Figure 1 (tube, each protein chain N blue to C red):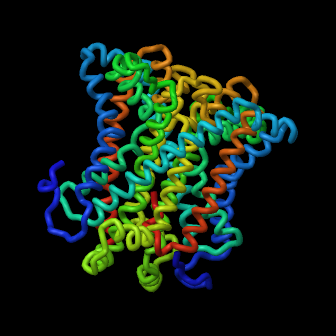
Figure 2 (figure 1 turned 120 degrees about the vertical axis):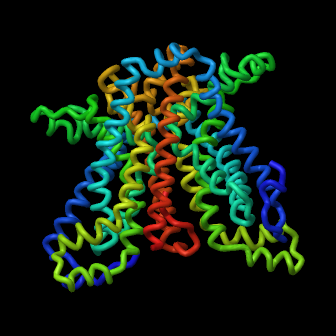
Length: 279
Length: 284
């Protein structure tokens, strides 16, 4: 991009052309051009072809599972993520630093490792599964397994988004509520919760967005039965393995459009959150 | 992190409730995070230490390890250069559409790993845009190392930049402007002023970038072709062992990556405790 278009204010700092050039070049070659290939390839398909691939019964049930499981996992993480953030910000207990570091484990642990580890726990003969199997509760190799994996993957997004907001929350508002006779529960529901709601929603949206596209941690525990426990990203891989590149691309385009819509919504949420925090 | 005093007050919870909340949080985290981590090591050692050592030292495992290190050794430095360039351009200058550029840099985070691999198949696969041209020149990208590197760079593209951009924006431009007006060259200003200011933030970003680069599964799985001993990275090697019902070996190899994750977490926490003021916001 020419310098004149982008630069507004004269600065004595050099290197704008070089660094912007590297950035635009890398962004185009690595990210934008390859991503555009999905849409260009999809645009080359006929409408019927696209609908047959992207909206087939099998694809629809895969979307339903991916989005449904991601939503359930986000809801579970809303509760336990908030609980974790609350405990880390408000209370002192031994081993707190270790616990706090452990919260980021899903960011650091490769997804394939998480996937086989969760399967070892929740398989019918696994560490936890063997206690649940006699009760008739199967987790691994069912849609519930997908939810378990997505809870693992999404947790840090909620905790790390809520934590700073909770820490910033002034004691004065809670003191005011208590002075005015509010019970602790009323203070939580009517004072604290509204203040952290934007962060909580943002954290859940981030977890949801990540969970929708998640692959590695899910495929080992899911069972991968078409129409039942097959997630959308796996269906893309299945189509590719059958050399149906067009079918894979149509599903990928559908997922990308939804992801970008989510990204847009998250950006709006963050603007809202920032406005509330600075107000 | 600031917190109100723990003493009994109208704005603190009763002791029993505090214990209940801490207890249920620890139970949840224990079941959800600590137990899976423990399972990796326990299952890896299930057949004994000798089998463990064999699993991580057999030729296929070694070549997978070598490939993982190679891919990271190319992808991470490239991401450092791109991340430094992007944050310099974005934080030290004003221009229109800056927020659009920042959003575009973050884009790979909202793309499914599988799609991140697929896009390179569409470009460089046999039927892809450049497929014929590459075949004519006998260059292989998909099912070969270049494809693995490209997919890894895509996946890790935002890590360094998103750590450095807010950090450099916080630090402003005065120090650079002072150095430059005292006659320092642009390069030596960057080297002696900017880089020391952001070194811990850079290290933080590199740490996360490297963990993801070495552990990426979905994207590399699509472009790798799973050629044993040739295009299998460690995560892909784990998948193959697991699908062959060679569980102990799969977990043994997985424990190497779990070890890497633990080292990453320890270093990351150390940076957060020691240099909190020199890092950008910790939220992803």
